[in-house]
Image 1 (cartoon, one colour):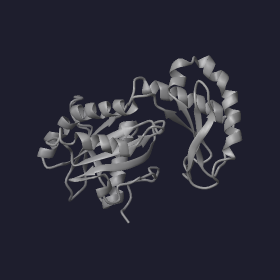
Image 2: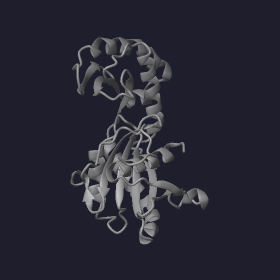
Image 3: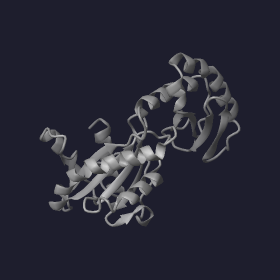
Image 4: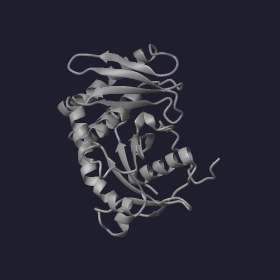
Length: 278
């Protein structure tokens, strides 16, 4: 399978396997089979277990977020080509969204050498081990930050793009989650009535502003409104350039967040899921 929907489904299968040692496989894709976007994305099957109905959606927290994120990724890539990044960790260059909204491509390109020099100079000042809080490397019209993410083999030695969202992010995030629940939960209800376990998978594609705790807080505020439609499980994913890099289980049965044992984070999605449970 390929594409972010398929990768998100694989992530859910992997999380279930890691937590329960039940290896589910894709039985069908109702929306594709019926050519009806109002149907769910996947039905999963595991012999001897209830079937699982899955609906996936992405969270976009402000207008033109994907376009802005793409511009930041391009800018960060150009900076990283001029920087020797240590191999012990991965690092994040945080820039405000306004920088990509207000400046032309030429103006942004003119900033690349200056930012690269500042990143090179400040990488040496970060803590030698573990994570590090970002700190300011450029001020003025726009404030840029550099941070150390920790030891993660897939990204070690790389400078990743971390976008600082514009004002009103949480209002936008809340509105997007509310819209997702309104649009997606009714699709899962008929499958729950058939005895299936239903899952809503929320994919937060921007690693820079993804925050499972804030997503959970929004969901908790809305759970009473959607109490008769809530799925068995809610999984939040963080993706980066169409790759799943992190997962948290936000809801399982009647339990939410910290009340769920072994709820995450799950990182190692490069491992195969089609092997025997150990």
